[in-house]
Image (tube, rainbow, N blue to C red; front, side, top):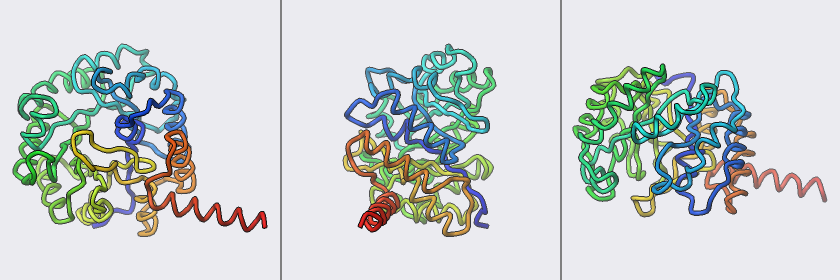
Length: 312
């Protein structure tokens, strides 16, 4: 049942960089997208069309979209929280439109109230015109169920609560459902229980996993999903990211770590691990720190050792 090919959606340029305190220049974001393309990424979440008042790091969204040298076969996604954001993205020249929009809804009522100051149901109702407008433009909409395994305010989140949001997303026409462990507290059986609820409403090809590695469970959770036949996952180059609403929550599982595991299992990804490490090292240099990922650290240390031997 484990798939022989897996698609990884790299969310580093958006979900990874949006929480950085220091301003990352549009040129560096564009360079990151180009590096990911060169490494074989075919699904990249590049930016978000949100108010710069709330997410100043994404204020250069139009500049980033305009600056990307697009490659055939690569899909570029943007997150938008409302119709105004979608309209801003579609105001760009047609050649600069994203291929996909991302919307989100929390599985935790407490998180929804604290994060966007409204109930889960109201939040999804607000997305209905976004979905309709995206479809009218001929674009796909991917939904993310955040806090699906736990909430920083509520604590545990039940599969029933997850399914409630999945059902609401299906009702408003969301095309793809991602189950997101926003604060990284999920473990394999709990993850499988949440994924089972999504699979009641979406085919396996339109369900994905999004795991943060706060407690070191992300790879185990991905393996648990693979055992259910899932073959699409969000990852973040260099382990970039976090959650501003959850103290201590780390970034998405690193793209390089997932690729190393999948290739070791004989599962194809279409990604070049060495080029991913190069991309991780480059963006980490921009941020002034080492990559978070185990694989990048190991590969970079091995390269440094080999270079030292060559010099001596």
